[in-house]
Each structure stands twice: as C-alpha cells, then as structure tokens.
Length: 123
Image (cartoon, rainbow, N blue to C red; front, side, top):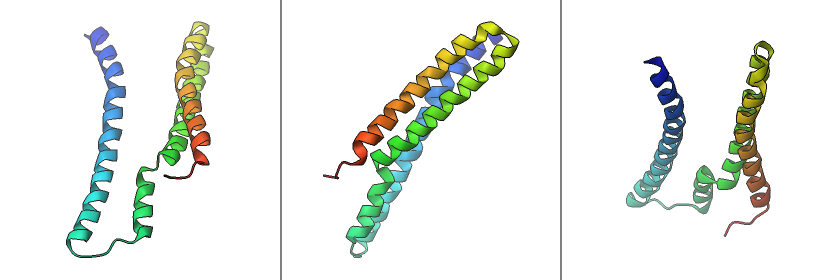
C-alpha cells in the first residue's frame, strides 16, 4: 500500500500547489475587478493613480523577480538536502543535486525575464 501511496502523493503535490496559487491569483484579480465595477456602478470616478496601483497587482515583471528568487531558494534547499543526505549515503548527492538543478535553472530563467523586462516601458 505504501509503495503506491507515496508516489501518488509525491506527484500530486506539485499540481495541487500550482492549482492553489492559480486559484488565489484569480481571486485577487476578480476582487480588484469587482471593486472597480462597484465603484463605477455607484457613480464614483476612477482616478488614473488607482488604475495604475491596481495594475501593479498583476505586474508580470515584479512577479518574475519573485518567482526567480523563490525557485533559486527552492533549488538551493534541495542542494543542501542532498549534501545532508549525502553525508549518510554518498550515492545520494548527485541525484539530489540533479533534482536541485531544475528549480535553479527555472529561477535563473525568471531572473533573466525580469532583467530583460525591467527596463521596458509599459504599452
């Protein structure tokens, strides 16, 4: 039973985490849009400053920086875990470093996107 349950849980954790992040981002954007809609329906004027602040909620350049830093930290944590496990079992170091390389490279890609998009003017 454990031989089946552990891989199922292991491989289902990542999609569930991605789904939760997507759900909360969707709810955040939906709340912002409902707030603007309610203000317009009640006859209030929407200032350009408010619209600019609301656009920062979904700023992809800022999100790339955060994602990049988090992915690199996640990869570094896997690398440290590999070194710690490797002290007990020397054969575990290379596979754990290999696993750690995936989030590190994703983090570097996001940091590259942030660096290239950082100086770009909004359309």
